[in-house]
Image (cartoon, rainbow, N blue to C red; front, side, top):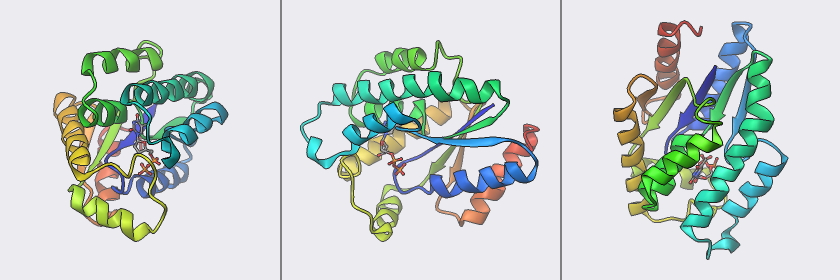
Length: 207
Ligand code: TYD
């Protein structure tokens, strides 16, 4: 089973990913977290290229293909093997991020992105079974990011309009695929968010 977490930067995905991993382990389930872009040697190298502030001249099209390249490697090198070994794979971002960021955010062709995601996920074989969209207003996410005090990377330095489009993209994806994507109000406390996640996983007999 593959479970992915999505949302704009600063939405609290990493906290929920960690909570879920602990919860699954407490149910004696084997769980493994991978982040995107990244998650293995080659994909982490691609991540460096993508997030480096020095690469401000990177074309949107190049950006798209690098995210897809990172995913292509991750699926074949890590996700396949983990699923074969009966792990629950938890993904901190996946294909929907490309649709939202490069499609809705950068305005690249959504049909091409769908095809590239299909290719990267081995003809759709490795798409998430369940996706949690942690949705929050861009303003809230921005102030959280500032509070983190970390250096802002190339993607995070995009303007507010970009993130508004990305958020709208995620909401559209959730509306289009209600059986897979569950939208959760990420401005709630981390405990309340996690309670909703658990409820959904219980209803799907995952825990
Ligand atoms: P990450 O550093 O994991 O940021 P966060 O912790 O805020 O989620 O994600 C890297 C950035 O890459 C993030 O700004 C979202 C962006 N991204 C895309 O634009 N397209 C993609 O397909 C993926 C996976 C991420």
